Length: 583
Image 1 (cartoon, helix red, strand yellow):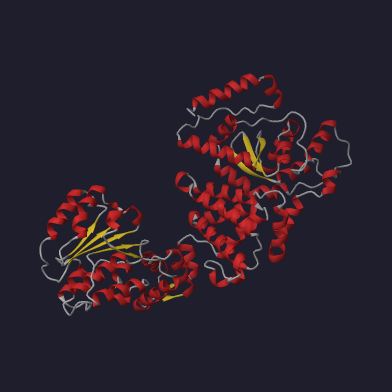
Image 2 (cartoon, rainbow, N blue to C red):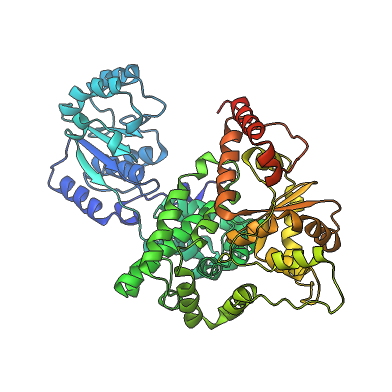
């Protein structure tokens, strides 16, 4: 015999077996006992909460041979309803039978008397899918059906049902089932099946099911196949691509430490291990919600995702939490429109990390006090940020041997490595929209990943005594964003760093660094501030969705001197480029 899924095998056979929905069960049982049976019901609520199962149980209670209100599961009426072949119980999928002709055929049958049972029961699932004309055809019959006919309409979207229908039915709103009830039901099933389990694993499955018993049993079915002898929490994380709560909390902490590099490294590591990025995004929203609730009420009983000992050490202001929640909720809507969800999620992480001026230091201090284990992350940030004395009086340590005037110029300009410094003076590389999109089109993802992997370790090999030390220090404040055979584009939060790296006087030495550290010959390095990079990425995605990306061309980096001489020509070229894309 073919295997039968758990949610079908263990479908409730009596009202007492239904998980949750106690108020609805009590009301239906009382209406039968008092012989106050309505002619039409609307069962609405989230998927997997028992709407169709309850409709079948109600039909069984109306027609059981041992007496109205019973569900013996032994008489011919109960067995026929359980097997789906009772001549008086009709299950109709409105999504497949939404036309007016289907409804007219149904109305023609309504007038006939029941064949086996006391009542003819019409269960119309996904009723919101019916067309307006089909609804209108049903109206009169729904309002005044024969005495022995009961309509049960089921839907997940009651807002799409016509008001004229809603006014003719008794409405029952099914709620999401609590995790506690779902876990209890899974325990009963596993004990019946003789399968061992860890309760923490079942709690994890219940949380993923989001209040749907059917979803929970489907996930449990997968877990049984994967885990074989015993369902373990560790294997559930692996099977469904989930992150440990510690990893999610660390992502939030890194964001509030402005340690974008560590946050992105953790996200990419988990993505490579098969993590579900969209589910991770949803989990972060739930964690932030818990933090907001706990920070406002200090009531641990209201927490859903976090435990009190997990929520207490995270000291983030409610203003920041609300801001980050707004960013996450807004970004969540974008996933259906993007090609690469990981890129979208990374941009969201970067946006969360870009706090208004003055908030970054507060976050560092608060988290440092609350979590000593993050001290190393703080030290890393402090090492890469020059002290005020260094900013005001840069005194780079260099070799005592004579250096040329050109080298001296390079070292002085490279010493500017903080966003508080003025932009470097002199001719610099111009990075316009046409150029950056041409680079993106030629981007090599593998090359970029290899660079990111070795970026910090290689740059830190440059000693303070080296004449290129301050260039490497500036690059440590950056992260490779795009890489191709001719150009590497790095991104940074600091405007001064980006301006300084783009100076023509530094370009040759950046090429030398890339050759010596990463074995990349004749490659240019240009820098973008994060906000500009995000704008360019959004533009690229818009062109891509419109199938308007240009073909790769030889990459030509203009400088500000050329821009002065050829300003009008550059403007014309940019305009021609935009017009060629049909934008």
